[in-house]
Image 1: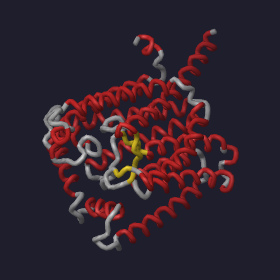
Image 2: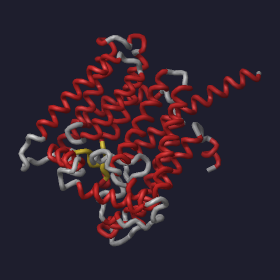
Image 3: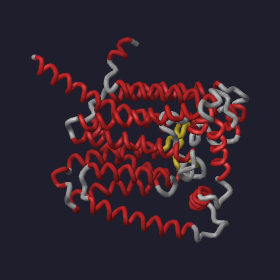
Image 4: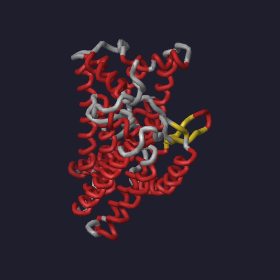
Length: 385
């Protein structure tokens, strides 16, 4: 154990943030899975907490082993992964496991489900970082830079879109921000953004022209938009229950384990876990969670600006931004700022592949920070020599 601790490198603040979020995760998942335990596990409330603890332990092992790998190697690893991800996304569209009325995963042995979009998100960001770093000499060119860089983004997001609109939209925005940081011409990005807005407007117009008896993902999106603007009924229920949980939390909350809305909220352990945290820990607890994510992002920016290689900068900022963006979306949904999206709260919500790929993402950031530490140590040694 002491040998493992000795080999832990990288940004200590990020390590602390991840540990604190995991502690909150264990407490919140244990509290919010009571109804689930009585429904499926004969009242064994410890089952889901133990399962989640094992997932987190494995996640921490992924962080440890990933952060020990020199970050530059991820360039080639995820280049190969990209050509695996695209066929996996196509397979998922046709024979994927139905999760929340959408084909989002593939069935693995032991009845485990692998969500291909989790792998696709990380792979695309790392692959995009590789392309941006290699094309810096011709980055202002439309033909040799913008088109080759945007093509993989459109392919991956397009394959995720039919069954998981929110993930595709979130990933697309994260990629645009990363491309902007990568110094692509602003006029190209604005043109793409304009096309996106027009396409979205046409899509929404078509969506609301569909007959009410139409079924499938299109109607799910329509109902969520209507619910957010107070016109629908189906999704108003979970939003209303989330509001009740937040309102009843007050300043200091009801304290751990005393949530009542966990019995009424759909998915209180994943999509709406932030509402349960606010109910049990109050405004103080919710501010603490938000601060942890903001501290995490601050350290990410610090690492991205200190690393010497372009690839290290892009990979750190891209992964860090996507994690924070997802966290903010989850919390915004809980307080009804955004329509229901189905996005989990990174490192807090109960999950399997989502937590593991988040942990790999954190491990990559820590790998870059480890390089920053080593470069700083070398410079200090040279200065004092």
